[in-house]
Length: 400
Image (cartoon, rainbow, N blue to C red; front, side):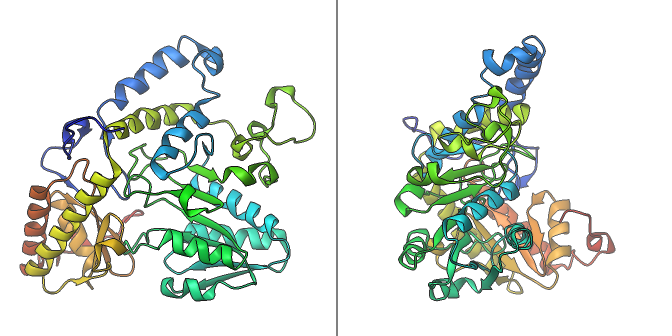
């Protein structure tokens, strides 16, 4: 739903430090102003006063599906087809293991070298564990379509490349996978809340994603998994946790999966963190995703024009065509790490990805044209005056 007359950005609904231009919402979204009070209420009343009765009185048990439906509306998923819980790595494992069971005669998992490493790591670990002679085949992003053949059991891709923002064509690649008889898995970590997504229209079997980036759920916010409704009843979950059981409190000795998407639940949900996410997701009742996408493209196009005019030594690493990228822009530079630290020190927060990528996220909920121009001007001064050339900016922390 969209409030009549809503104009982006809605900065007044977020906690944004004075003087900071936050271009890193593609990595961790800022705090919505309504979240602290809601979490405090949950802790003081629901946990503090209701104690264990909160599972029923406050419906903590139903929260993963309830919040899943809120996410589902943003990714084009039908009611009851998305459930929350665990981490994105776990959800990748669940989707991939289910996909391989659906195609037992095939041995290839196809992905690309723009996929987020954890997705590839989980595939490698699953292959070692099941010992079935499977292969993880990794190709360049532009070679994915031609690499889909009759040996491929599952195609596993991140829609938007975490480094460059390059965007895959979800519908076309899902069709290519299905034409070859393969199962399609999409990682929407850099898509959900950043651009319009329609998993139902694509026909993909699975989609997964995190909620601490564009959805502003906070650090460690739980992940989601979508399962196409017509296949749900046939999936045998590899991680058969008790909350994925059809009757968890029957305490049966053997696993019997739930009849719906809740079979993809594993362990006890993080209720406090999920409460923060649930509150944050209420913001999206005000936002039209087509308007958001248009604003995102306008901001990113402005940033590219400003930076290329001001900083000729930087090289655009994102697709030039805005239809081919998500809601971020990346520039490459041999001095990228130090330059990013210099930017952060001056109140412009982006981030760096090895070997040379400076990433900037454009979230129209709280970024406007003035922010973009000021960020580009500060970047120009850093590059022109070599302000990055300071030993303090070359020191790498654990998180870059």
